[in-house]
Length: 124
Image (tube, rainbow, N blue to C red; front, side):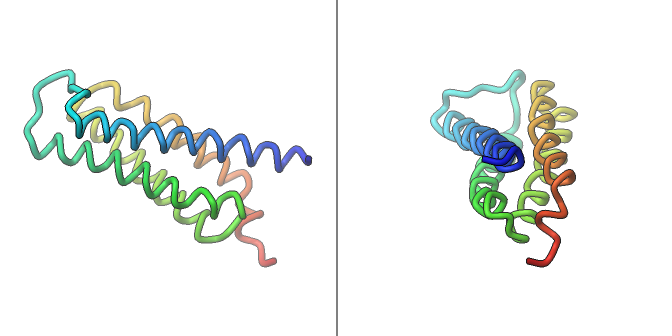
């Protein structure tokens, strides 16, 4: 296999684990197995929980497009990553400090897409 293909598989695998983790955190919150550092209003808890679900589900839906180097996968993953960064910065500032860790994987995914954008944007 080519190095580029192996790198693509590694990034897609990493992203899949990350998005599955987001869905798992939603599930843990929905079943009452996850607690916040401080007491939060029900609205904030719902926003956080459903944002985890949205990031995980939409991220997983976009991964086949990234793997197949489709334009919709490229732009969809950029949108999911941008929302993830915005959400995690908000959650860091307003909810709990551990939310800042969620920015790192989103930046890695965005960095990969930036470095390989010609593979997605060039006509085939």
